[in-house]
Image 1 (cartoon, rainbow, N blue to C red):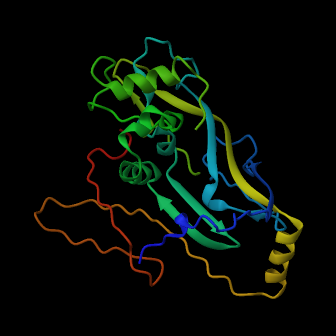
Image 2 (image 1 turned 135 degrees about the horizontal axis):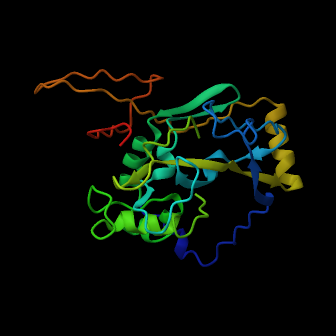
Length: 264
C-alpha cells in the first residue's frame, strides 16, 4: 500500500538534533614520507572514543608524473596516466576493523574500473570524475588527436601538474604514453585517509554510551567485494572455481576480459 504521509499537512516536523558536529579528520600513513617504497602503505586510526562513518571515507592521493630519470615532462610529450590511473598505481587494498578483515581487493585498477563502469553515468567524467582521473579513452592508442580521454587527462596532469584525487605501488600499469615519450614514473608526495566522524549532542552521546555499556548486540550489514583473476587456456570451454569468505551468497558477479593485462 502506498505511503501518503507526505500529504499529511498536520504532521509535526521532525528535527534531528542528536548530532552536534559532523566533520572529516585526516589520517596519514605509518610509513611517514616513505610512501614510494615497496612496502605496503598502512593507515591506522586508533581513536577508540570517536564515532566514525567509514562508508563516507575517501583517499586523497597527490604526486607527480615525471620521466624515470626524474626530469619533468614537457607539454608536447605524449604521456599521461591511464583512465582511472590513480587506482592503477596500486596492486592491492585491504580494510580491517578491530582486527577483522572487512574487504580485500586485488588488481585494484581493474576491479575499480569494472565497478565504476556500472556505477558512474557517462556524465560523471565531465564533472567530478576528472578529480580521480576518470575519463574514458575513445581509442586504444596514445594519440592527442583521436583519443579524447587521453587528451583531457594529459592536459589535466601535464599542463596542470597539481592533482588530487591504498596499497603496493606499481607505476607501469598507470602510465599511458606513446613510444616516443620517455619511460615514466609517479612520485607520490601524499596519501591521506579522510574519515568522517560524528560528535553527538549530549543526549545523543548518553544514548550511545548506554548501548555500549549494556553490550547490546548491534546488527551490522555491509558489502564485501573481492577480485580474482585467471588465465584462460586456448580452448572453447573452461572451469573457474570462485571462493567466497563467508556463507553469504554473492549478490552479483562481474566478469571482464583483458589482453596484455600487466605493464601495459
